[in-house]
Image 1 (cartoon, rainbow, N blue to C red):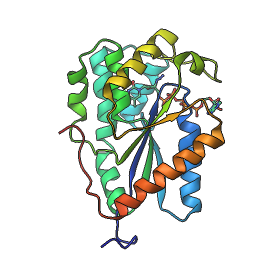
Image 2: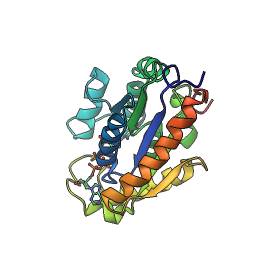
Image 3: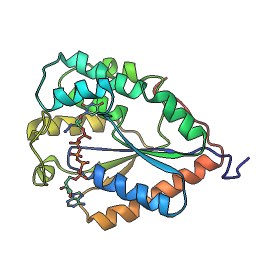
Image 4: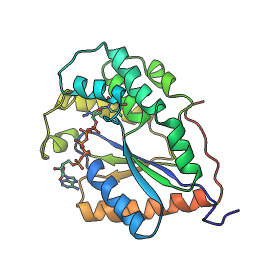
Length: 212
Ligand code: Z5A
């Protein structure tokens, strides 16, 4: 039925370069949805709380070194270890807002020179988002924002390559939002797009898998 008590939640993914505002926006969105009485959770990848996530975290902060393919597979494993929980939450009616997902996995690893299709392969079979919002910011602009430069990938030349990889990945279903606007402006745009997506999921839009 399309009765909201038995319908599934939406899988909403926010993507973009470092410092594009994903964390700010996903948290505001979460509060907004809860305020409307929706069941909603805020997730992020990497999920640094698991043991795989701790290996990723130490790599990102330059405390450990790993082969490019090994770290790629760890990022993917970090999503796989949350897959069944994600599916059960969605099916029980909870909307999940995710700060980074498989697209980050492919964009960052392929920016290092790894083969694009090789990067996509381990993501196949993870749940496909109902909505991908790309917060678009020129890399030069991102470097001017607070907290930039602390971690491994936070370098201008690399972020330029990541942006190109995202351009190769995106399809017509992605919503591209200008991330240079005010926090409030972006917030309003996201609210509208996300409510529409939640509505479609309540009308029994099927849950599908990535890149199969
Ligand atoms: N990575 C990967 O390689 N493979 C994978 O599979 C995955 C990730 C999942 C860590 O990710 C790294 O892992 C990341 C990709 C790679 N590397 N990089 N680069 P992360 O998500 O943990 O960390 P992050 O990307 O560095 O996110 P962040 O630092 O949390 O940035 P953000 O979420 O995009 O932005 P923010 O914290 O909301 O905002 C940044 C600052 O800008 C802050 O001071 C805000 O107050 C300010 N801000 C926000 N919005 C605005 C607007 N609209 N105007 C002006 N200022 C603003």
